[in-house]
Amino acid sequence: MKTTRKIIIYTLATLVFTACGEDWLNINEDPNNPQEGTLSLILPGAQTSKGFRMGRDINKNTMVFTRQMYDLSESQYTQDPTTYSNDYDALFANSLKETQEIIEQGTELEAWNFVGIAKVMKAHTYLVMVDLWGDLPFTNALNGEETLSPEFTTAATIYDELLLLLDEAIADMDKESSLNVEGDLIYAGDLDKWKTTANTLKLRIFLNLRLVDASRASSGINALIAANQLINDNSDDYEFTFGSTLTPNNRHPLYQIEYVDGDKDYYMSNYFMYNLIKKEDPRLPFYIYRQGTDDELDFETTPCSSRTDCVYGLLSTTDLGEAGEGYIGRDHGDPSGLPGDDELRATFGVYPVGGEYDNNTRSGAGQGDGGQGAGVLPYLTNAMRAFMLAEAKLMLTGVSEGASVEEYLEEGIRASMDKVERLGLALDEDAEAMDDEAVDAYVADRLQEYADASSDDLKLNVIIKEKYYAQFGNGMEVFTDLRRTGYPADLPASLAPAAPFPLRLPYSITELNTNANAPSPPPALDSPIFWDVN
Image 1: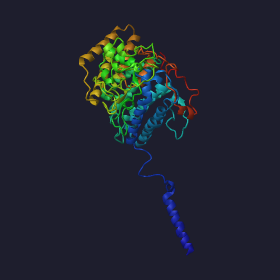
Image 2: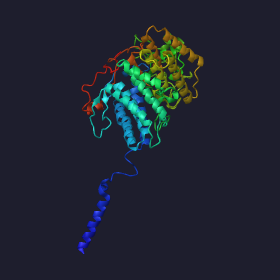
Image 3: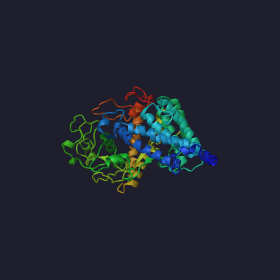
Image 4: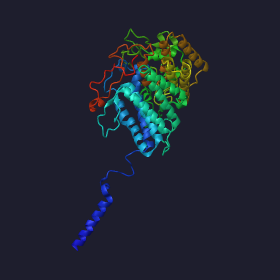
């Protein structure tokens, strides 16, 4: 009897362990909550993380460096390894890591459309980061489970890898896929638009190589023009669109900061506003919103009140006169302090942050006003493509394809005007359409300015300065153009610099402290990126 009972017990035990195998230990796995996210959930997460991280300190500070807005610390060029740690770390840990997961999972599933989209996103993110930081972890950088200290790859080598990655992306999107694309917040799964973005990113890379490898840049750009598969309409623009809700707060990061009742962190740059007014730029009421009037200021709140060397001070006291009234900003590096003028200073308008259109009402900019923050971060646009081709056609003798420099210049200006107007009219019911005659006059003046320029360098200054205004809202691209070309040539110096003008951003303190392969010491902030040889 005892023997029979033992046999039964051993038999049951054998059956239990045989049936369960190794799975009996997987007590922490919930089959209703898979640990690997589906592609349609990872994709929008990666896009959103990237939009908010690139739209915060990186974008804001590069807009300060390029005199489009003002913040005292950044206009004095004060930076350290903690300045961008959150954004740098998150771009790797969230956006790039999630993009890599899409590539790996999509490859296993043969969901080539997802794979191609993710490769374009990865290429763009790395391109922007290389242009800001230089050498970066690249090979095995997104495989933290196995490689805790990835080696740094040189910036020039990453450029080569990104061109290959973009070719792979286009080839992947031409394959038959096992899934339909869902969750794409940028192009709603339109692969043709992702392909034009990939090709326009290649144009961006080749143009950046202009001064270090002119032959390669020329041949690459000629091929792209001949293929005619670049972004060529504003509806194809590669950009991230923010929302208008407070909970969760998905509004444009600069709207979140500036459209708070009686509480502003920044000023608009006097240089930026002066030139918009001086040239009678039709984008002015879309770009800048005036909260108050000059006569509401007292001595303590007057810009440059403690300086005698300001270029502008109050714009109404310059040659602008009445036209400059209410455009209360700051000169670059003005250390006079930040008095209680939060409800008076000029701020961002309806484009690009989703604020208010300036119809001369002069009321404080507060939460929920204007477009409620549903603005955009324009990564790569039709206007930018036209300006890039204008530069290439002017400065690279080997570029024979395409239209004339003047045609590209005009195309870029008009594309920017149209983009700004359309978003403004869509977001703010008080916005007014641009006057067609004013747009035509502006274009004519710029073309005449180009024709009057006596050298190619001066002509390039005209092109880059127009690109400078068209790229408002993307300080990263403006910062790259400034370092690469030296233009716009008339940017005022900081009134009180605490360090040299930065030619790159400092690495994250996390990277420096935890990656054994991080450069030690890190490169000086006034050492140029490899393409910066002007």
